[in-house]
Image (cartoon, rainbow, N blue to C red; front, side, top):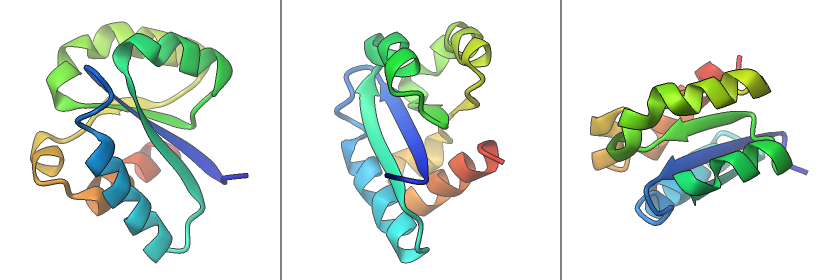
Length: 105
């Protein structure tokens, strides 16, 4: 079982798939056993209830939903934030992984 679960959410769950791959590579390089996956924002309620990620990161394109999602994650005790737009656009998986780790402290 993974030591931490990191969930990324975007409009369809597709645009973050390459970023997930880069994050997994960075985690592996650092000897971390993380489960990292991407889902659509419409799946957030189900994932919070049933999968209980350790952190939730929103893609910048759905950053406008931050307040709505934060209310849900706060109630579940799950830290969340919006992925830095530059790191997202340049697919800097190591940077996004580091941001997730800071939130999980």
